[in-house]
Length: 101
Image 1 (cartoon, one colour):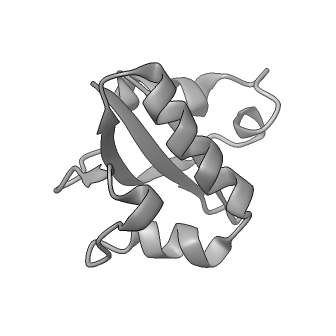
Image 2 (image 1 turned 90 degrees about the vertical axis):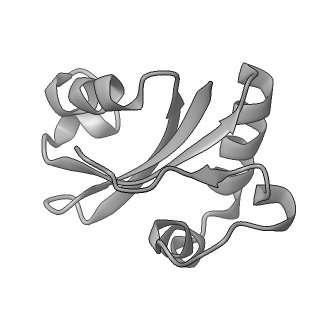
């Protein structure tokens, strides 16, 4: 199973969206990899939202690319909101409840 995750860094005041089969391990990598171009500059990333997004890498990449192309903070804030139910092109996303980072 592949997951799409949304991270937030308080020091950067930015969100980051990515995908992984092991999202909690990937979060640790984001917080400890100083060479990463985007997330490596900060080490305070928190997991804000996690979604099951499909069984194939192609599925997850398509959804991730769609979200990133929107360049919309409003969309990211909706996705982070636990009350928001994804629809239309995001309907494949299934929220993973009760995040523990």
